[in-house]
Length: 180
Image (cartoon, rainbow, N blue to C red; front, side, top):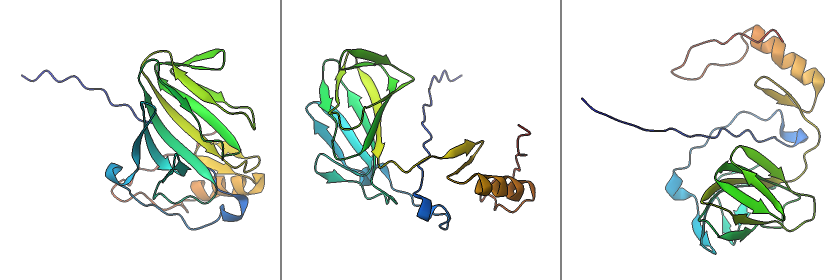
């Protein structure tokens, strides 16, 4: 008898493409965790997943200026976010942090005001994902589809219904398009 207790925790992230790249060929590149820069910034463990921060650049390609960091804060530590991105957000995965006079707990996305310097202070041990980049304009999101064009969104729905999307290798399951 094995008594195994484990917890799987994951975050799925979808990054928008600039309008002129929305119709580019799909691409997938795998980067082992060891290929991503891991650094210590004032006691905060920072992994640079996409983009450039604190003098380190991720090897993961991006189609526009983009930042994606995983940050592990010990209680009491602080981190000032890079100010070279037009938009910034902090998603608190676990723990609790303070930004200015506001406190944010797990499951909350805090969005920074444009042009403001953001410093995060850990109220308790915390894990925070930092998301940033250029403003790519308005997008429509419906089910698994994202587009800057309503017409393209309708075409994607029809293509899905008609079976014009490829399958994932090793997973031949077809999930019907939701009715609403």
